[in-house]
Length: 486
Image (cartoon, rainbow, N blue to C red; front, side, top):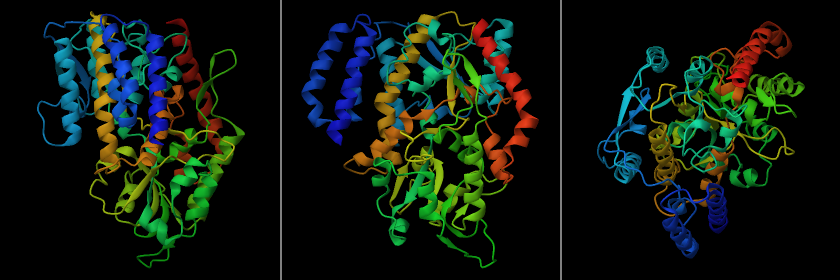
């Protein structure tokens, strides 16, 4: 497996270099690095080999100026003044140091809390024509409100940004329409990885119930929603002896009632917005399959004693909490909880993708929670060369230096890396969906319909759509028109 992952990485590298052409003054060094990569692949695993991937950025001297990011309450993901001994913190420090020394640039951050204050601040700056920062990296859904207000540059007009490189999520193509992209998702914002939804599996408890190695099921394509229900539906203990299912009991499977449930929409390939054969975006959530999805999920939580979620939106983290207490064999969660909440968890566990709808579905899919950060550039930005080079470099160095360390923490690696686990994380991150209808939801779209229906235990999607659909469709049509005419 290790050799296969390395070869895939090197193939991606060669394609990336070919697509980028010479890329400025470092072309000779790039060629040498490629030769070195070919000679050392047997000694490196896939994550270690990332450092050999060239970013093709030109020589550039920023003159010691500050690169200022606007964000909310995520300072550790962007600024680290010194090494702390924490491996992730130190990787962030090394990333910033590498970019700082290479381009003679310093880093600063403007933090706002809560997240919507970022939007209020950037709006004020745009309205007054000010340019006090270089990059916005903030809550993707809230940031979408500013997009339709016309506050951001088109990323395709920012020099040196190359979405073909592996430090940009491939799904950025899905966020582009009519040659325009106003939000971009890359690895500089580590919380996009952290907030990627996954399934945790307690191996010890699984062995107790005869479940065994779940990686086999993932890799042979049999990890489906029906498989999940089959494995967990009868695993239940009424620990408080009150005769009813609640958060005090033991379950085969537990899920938070909010975005953890929404994620099934993309896991089962039923997007909100998609392009038609003519390349035009359409509001497409309403399908017969969606009715089946809602019925399946409601049936799982309501009728199967081993499957549990709450009926409101107030119990964020309940799935991970029960899992941490070894009161759930499986739970929906995010990769970030492996690196934080479960960091000292004693039981051995696996990180799995969300199940597929059925075995005919070719790929596993997931999504990153709406609180993850997307990047934008203000229309008032005066130095796009500076912004493009430094943004590209920060994303590249994050992918090379920070993400491999973060994977190790999430997987509790203390020696030889488990390539099966790394492979699943690669599946999760590389197949993470960034639905145009979700990312540009702007609090006015259909992003949270599924969780609303599951919390209400309602299968009546038709009535729900009749009441909500017309206004949401009007919003999306307005959004499409903005992209088409901007």
